[in-house]
Length: 474
Image 1 (cartoon, rainbow, N blue to C red):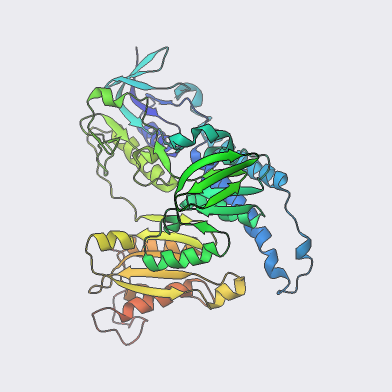
Image 2 (cartoon, rainbow, N blue to C red; image 1 turned 135 degrees about the vertical axis):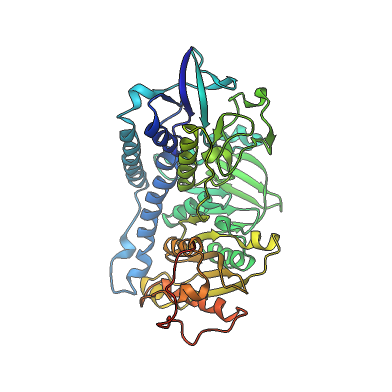
């Protein structure tokens, strides 16, 4: 039986990041994966979806041309086959980048087989077994297909299959308006596809603030129909796929794009047979070290279901990789939570959400800014949006934010950095804001929050010479 110091199961972002850390300390490791290489992000996730979104938004801008004095926009059209060829071309470029990064170690350390635990330190690969001192589990997740819908699989598109479409369908029902459903649904609509969406609630892109949820619903339902009712059944009538909703509404489409979540890839690993404590269907693990309780295993990336985002998976992989090659696990603090939905306007959630703060009974004030009438947004033809910043009413510390705003991907980073640095709203207001920029909307929200604080305001937002500089939390 072959022995190694560390075995990594899964060659996605978390697994590859773990490998880099392990390789700093030892060459006695293997990385095992029997699937298609290239990471979920590069192949079927963040990167190809952004290519499609860019094409859709470029085409959508033709609606501003006449007002700007640019003629001929009405004659533009979409060649959906060429669009998908372009998407796949860039997708393949991103995948080649991932595969290229594997070239220097792949032959010596990579095993293209399926692994299953047959002992705490033994992995069965079908035709051989490997004994490992430590094991990192980074097997990712897969799109959910509700069991009763399986007979209609030929009519259903999941996110793994979407980017293999040769052309775009004429009519699509988007089921689920989380991040992926909203991004792809809006892009398809802007490319001329007849889109109808189905969602159980108004939590577009993960929004939890009721005011923002209502604003987002009004905004997106003005672009394409949105039904807030679950799907009770599917059936086919001739060339139509018919969705019957729980409120009795029927929707006839050509295909349905499913975005109802992803399931961690734990089935078939054999974990249940080795006495691993489970909670909500997943092994119990320490979220600061990622060690599985009572085992020499680490559980990282999308498979653990905590923060299924590329930058988070990379961090988790690095932490697990570091701990796997050291005698004592090191506890690491997570970065400030941040997620972005690349809809138009962008949706972003930063720090602690409205739902979290409310559920924990935390007192907070909300600073609000509207992008209706915001100068830079008007100039860019992207007017509209709403930004909420949550702050401690006593200390002024920025606790979190939710937003639907143009340039939200950049606003989210500024807010995440402010939270990570422990800044209060008054400290943030002492920092520079240029004019005219979208970031001025953030200043408006901070000012609104500052007016609701319990302390007395300083004479000006700018610091006095005697004031200490804005610093980073010790």
